[in-house]
Amino acid sequence: MKYLLLSLALLAFFLTPAQAADDGLYDPVAPAGSAFVRVINTGLERSAVEPEIRGKKYDEVEYGAIGPYVPVPAGKAPVAIGTLGKDIEVAEGGFYSLAVRGNDVIVFKDAALTDPAKALVTLYNLTGRDGLALKTADDKKIEIVPPVASKKSGERPINPL
Image (cartoon, rainbow, N blue to C red; front, side, top):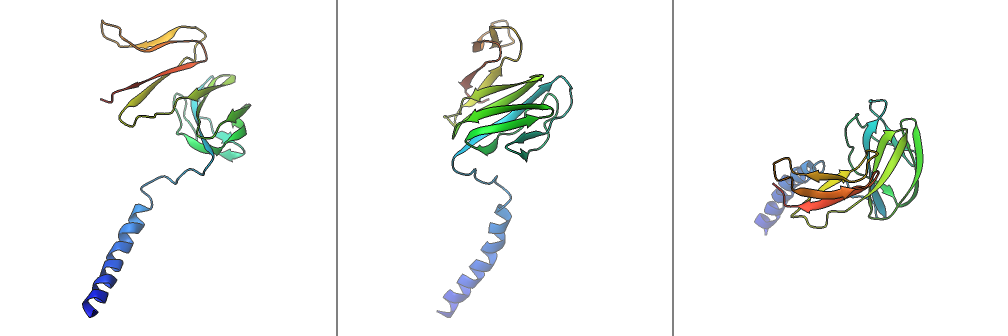
């Protein structure tokens, strides 16, 4: 009995630091009822922007970069990105990309990746032209994402490399 108690005490002593070291490995779990929003910065100013959603500021997004998805409560969400502002509606469990383009914020409803064995390629058409498609660069010009209208997006799940 004495050895059992000693073994349990030693086990508890050695497991506690290991558990504490795991705390920083994973992002916190998103609150129930969250939507997920990110910013694509292609603004005219060619500078970093600091997004603010429902009054909460998030990390700057450099020009030409895409920020990470951040959880926000579902429903109406006032957004400020740099000097631009817009009210958006986000649904629980939905994924949204907000593209800063010129003096506008374009809202894209993103597809959720449902197959963890696939990668999702998304094409955002931020041009003024309709029919933008994503094709391979080789001579075959195989279509990866079919033509997309201006200010719309298209996606395709693919096998990862």
